[in-house]
Structures are given as structure tokens and as C-alpha cells.
Image 1 (cartoon, rainbow, N blue to C red):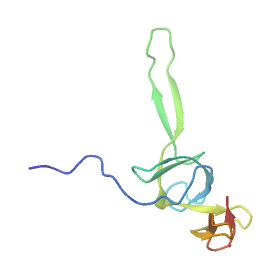
Image 2: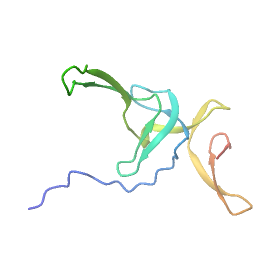
Image 3: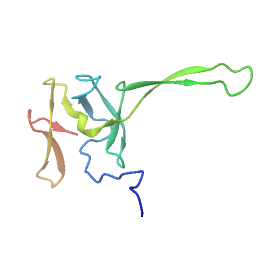
Image 4: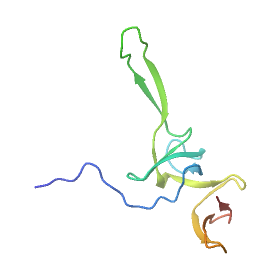
Length: 116
């Protein structure tokens, strides 16, 4: 009998892009804002600059080398972040509209602000 696979793939569309300004809506970093550095599509997670910081203690590998403490941003699930408007200081969902040239543009639902 075959058991469940170890890596579960989630096929949900991520509506965020690299460089977007987002606000954390749940967890220990709630209400903090930051820029999306990377997107992990396979697990539906994003890495946000300065948010969800973790500490890793690295042992020295060679003699004479010193150990170090490394701080890095850990991934956050996309359901825990929302697009953020700096102009109106509010987090919002987004929708897609088509302009007169036929290009798709993202728009914040609460404010109507267009996102690049």
C-alpha cells in the first residue's frame, strides 16, 4: 500500500509579484509591512524583506574559524499577507482589470489604486 507523498503540491494561483508591498495579517509579525523578495510557487509561500526573521547558529567548519549567528527571512504562506497601499495606509485584496490597450492591470479593491 502506498502512503501519502511527503511533498504536497498546492496548485493555487499566487496573486503577488516580486517587489510588491505587502502587510502581514496574522502571526507574530502582524501589521508589519515589507517588500516581497521571492515567491515559492510549489508551497504557495513568499519571502518578505525584514519579516519572519529566524536565527541560525553556524558551527565552525575548519580549525581556527569562528562560529556565527545568521539571521534570515523565513517563508510565509500567501494567505497570511495582503497587498498594501502606502498612499492610503490600508491593506486590500486585488482584482484584475483590462485597460484600453488590452493589458491586464492589478487594482486594489478597497482604494481603486492601480498596481504596476
